[in-house]
Image (cartoon, rainbow, N blue to C red):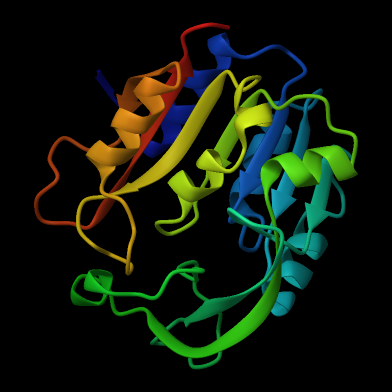
Length: 221
């Protein structure tokens, strides 16, 4: 399996995708990665999800000039409805949002990171399959999942869309960073059982830190 640096990921993934990929980015935060994806694939379409109202406003503003970006004030989850979201805050800038919010309650990650969770809010949620049906999205080529431990639950609740996906870039946890979150080997085992194979990662060891990212390729597409 190849070890990648952050700046190498999109170039590595590109050969596995069509020139006009349909991309779902979940956990878009303020649009930093959204802009990267949209400009790297200018003929593709990026569907960006961010549930926290204040952060969603930043996402909309930061991607307003990109005609191939569509933004949704929703949290991708394993059910459609509403759920409690743990809002994260930058400890050095009180009130400033931090890219570590989650539908799951923080646990061991608090030993590794100074991110704070001062409040909980109710947010609208959707499954990928329900969202795709509502917006008439026939397929997704690329899943970019940064959901702080909730990635596997989202994929498990998307049997229809997952059949079409060619590449998954997902965060994986090495410890119980959030209550009830699966560890990285559980995510890998589930995806391998559903037709994917791990082809790259951005970590060499699982010790000393609490998460990493992995790239999975659909073996049937």
